[in-house]
Length: 312
Image (tube, rainbow, N blue to C red):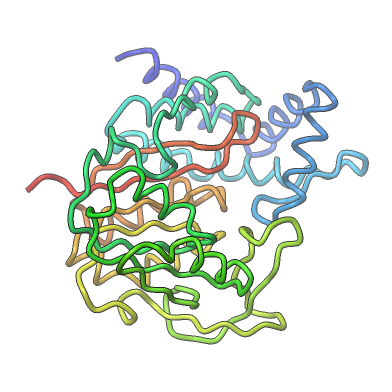
């Protein structure tokens, strides 16, 4: 056993021996020891996005820290399972770094895992080449991920690219940015686990954080990938502001039958870090798993789970 394994299992054993209240107390104490500017930065960031709970230092409200404590305690065995399923030690060290960041605001470990020399989502150590891909981009935004894909693998590496997004103003930019590329199919729909009508919930900070909601003023058509795309899919990228689990459930047949490479954001919900891998594995056990982080070491976000089909 190496030191990364030892550190992870020691942290897991420590958490197993504590109550939620004890874990929360340790997290809060670590948070309060941070420099004031760091605490304020974390508070502001968490309160901009309705993903992880609020922090209100002035009013002694640390909902986000309590939620992290609850996830750590109730799902440490799920994190152990995820750890055992990760295929390289960069992924394992990153998972340890994320959890120790949650538990005691260790910034150093995550920082050592952020030396990504590749484009966001397109890590050449995990996906070294692409050929004749049918790529689905859920949360295509302005086309930045597709441009990164093409700059990494070339214009002749794909058969078709499907771009899904839900925001009018960015959808126009998306089409303009990708206009010079062939075989791009644009879908102004939300992808979920069923066909329905839901609503666009706008984020005042950034259109990239707009999401689907049960209530609102702007109706949205939702579909599933199993219904909306008939051809074989070889790669699915998802960054859809917490709707990733439902989108996976609406893609069960493609995941079972096509074995697509899956590049899934798992940071919009604390539980997604362990839950998405478990869900994919239940649908199709023929995958190897990797984690990468393209965010920062203070509040790790832009965490991507790669599910890569095993060699036959």
